[in-house]
Amino acid sequence: MCNTIKQLFKQNTILINKKIVVKGWVKHKRTNKLKTFVIINDGSTIKNLQIILEKEDKSINIGVYLKIKGLIVLSKGNKQTIELLANNIKIYGIFKYKDLQKTILQPKKHSYKKLREQSYLRFRTNFFSSIMRIRHNVSYLIHKYFHKNGFYYIHTPIITNYDTEGSSNLFKVTTLKSDFFGENAYLTVSGQMHAEAAALGLRKIYTFGPTFRAEKSKTPRHLAEFWMVEPEIAFFNLKNNMFLAEEFIKYIIKNIMILSKDDIELLDKKNIIVNNLNKILTQEFQRIPYSKVIRILIQNGYDIKWGQDLNYEHEKFIVESYFKHPIIIFNYPIDIKPFYMRKNKDKQTVAAMDIIFPNVGEIIGGSQREERYDRLLSQMKYFKLNRTILEWYINTRRFSTVPHSGFGLGFDRLIQFITNMKNIKEVIPFPRSINKIYT
View 1 (cartoon, helix red, strand yellow):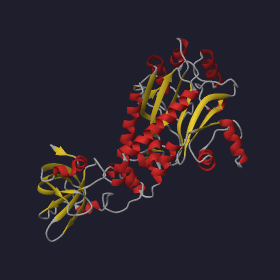
View 2: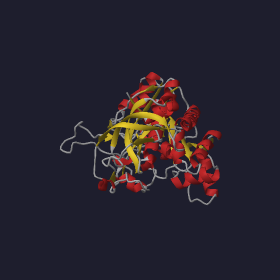
View 3: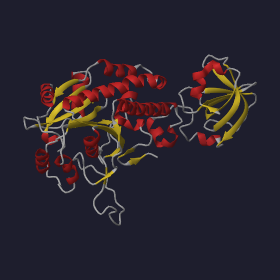
View 4: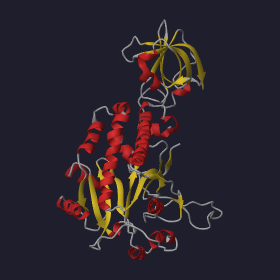
């Protein structure tokens, strides 16, 4: 049986004088007159394991993969508690040392841009492997939270024939010579509409999958391909929705600080990450109506009018300079939100809500859905939408419905916030953005 390095350190001194097998990539190598010391990592933890060889093997260099059989002993150094005395080593994937100099495996500091340009090797770096383990643990916590709270996980289509958000930033799916589906087809921007249909039969559901937007944005907060978490709940109003969103995100942050403690410590050289996360946990997400946000912005010199959408500059000021903690903005004007949001009694706003975080801006967007059949038709007419394409969606109201709500969490933005990365491209394995596919 092969042990992971994480398992070895977890059992620690229990394994002293026991023979084990371990595999991993060489991170560092040094030789003195008596012995050779090789540092390996297998991706299971940020911690490395030191291997001691009685004689030097020049075919072992940084980056090669090793399978080592040996004896666990107490370490004589102070950087680790245990190390491995090797008696048998198998080397995989030997390559020339000079080729190493052209890669990010070379043991020196590389720019984030350089790391991105060799995305296929990023997983072997301390920095990126830590982010990926955090990403995994956040995914695990999302599924755990919803399972514990009675939600069903469903898979919504990636290929659709409509634009959920009404932004027209769609990637068209085509076989070039003919339309495979016999009609226009696009990569989905959201699983929400299909999620609504599911919630009206299963009551509480969530989706978690890739979404796509052809938004021509080069900001450090946007990707063309990204992941969304979208719960949808029957018998839920906007107030319930805001409560769920806050509880959900605080659950993730509270538990990721425990699950990913070592990896967060590696990334958090100045204690910024822990401070950021603790602020989320210790402060209530204050609810602020859109109209009040506009008044605050005007009073502070911003050139904006009621009815205009908020941009990142506005969100940044409101959450970082004015309130200095996360907020939930709700009741947005009808014209700047999609047709499916429930119209309020004032007939000017809809029951929408956005959660705004420091550093990344909007992290969750959601609403109470317009469940009233006639009102939904009226909204579609107002926005001049094609009823034929959305007839199936209209029928979710036609054949009986109930008040229901949901939201979408930008998964990659959440990872960006947790890791305090300035660019969202650093928190996804293979970024896709305008003018660039990183492979």
